[in-house]
Length: 566
Image (cartoon, rainbow, N blue to C red; front, side):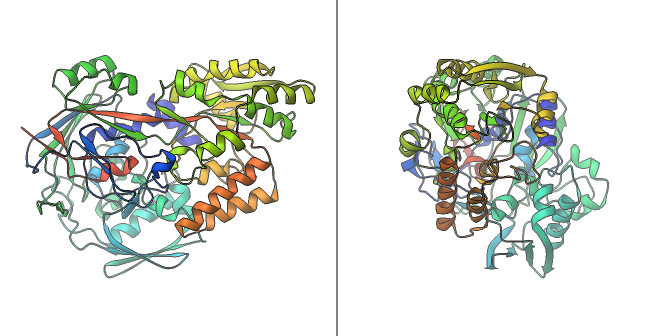
């Protein structure tokens, strides 16, 4: 996580907007990433626009479907920051949203709707036991025309094996920990790849389907890997035709792309290409969209989206990050459960929803709401597990003889809306009689102190969490990374056992129940980390853009059935 946040800070752009940048690509049909269940009961499914339709629990929503798809045209849109490295295993900035446009994942499971799977390079998956995953590969996923000396051949099992081995051997890789710690062996036999896990791991499919695990032709891995930072050649729907650093990127259709639209039989993608402009000034992007210079962009929030007027389609998808309040349970006064409970009862999450996001967010439990059925019921959270009760908070403060603590946080940053959360949090604590000494720190200093547990408490940024694994890990003795860094839990054996069970339960219904039970066990012990709220992300599309998906999170970037009318 330290490398992640260091690179994010250097990129000078909020992580929750990075993958969202790819949302302006749009599409429809089947797809999938991570784990979660998009239950309408929990409100995890975003509302479609008036020109869209809602999908089933195992399908995406389809916005502005239009009539019969037509081929042609170039889709023009903007992003708000530079792309960074195009290396699909180490890149972390805006380019990461386009890795699945250039390469292929084996398969992907939707974080927002875990019943929705998108099989890409793999056509099927067999799991004969809890540690064995047999991927049957498609025979016709051919590499795009390129000037990198890679033949336009079909990808095969050796490409998969060498890709996973590269990730496991590259500490700078975003998914290094997964490949290094959880993949014991990758074996290739004809058109099947068998990946053996080191131990039963509930989140294996979610992790292997991340965009940071896209399959790269072995010719590129055998040569100078530094060229992957600016060039690409894979089996995805597009090829990187031109890159102008700090200005734009141009993608052309891959004429070898294997996939057809099941509705029409036409080869995908429909559009001739994607033209992506970097427009760092939001007002300029807003103007470019309204004047028809671009077909899509990312409004700052729902308030801006609602100013765009009629004739515009708005996509709204759940985000997977949040600001949290973290306590160091190794130091007093947080060794006292009453102190931790006083902070919990003093937090009114509705204030953050209203003030920071203008209503375009939802309160979080220990597992954020955007993970669907993994999250506890919102009514139960408000009534039982984390009620806002200023009277009880004051009573607890009095019982322990007063609470005075120093809170650290990254100063001078608006990553994830942090600067807007801070005054609300400090005001809520003051209202409960909790005395706070503020300790703003330079980002790097804050991050290092956080990593080394050199703090009493912190108002903390968090990266995207598309499974409950890391949110639950905060409450264990080994922390979210499993190495004791950032946060250490209470060391409670019941918590440790409950989280372990959730992380080792393979079948989805039983896993959801185990995640619920782990949260309830943690609440009974008074948690040390409180996620606050998670927002929605918005994307605006012009009227000529049809049939793109919503409600399935980043899985939408794998779907390429969107099309343009004249």
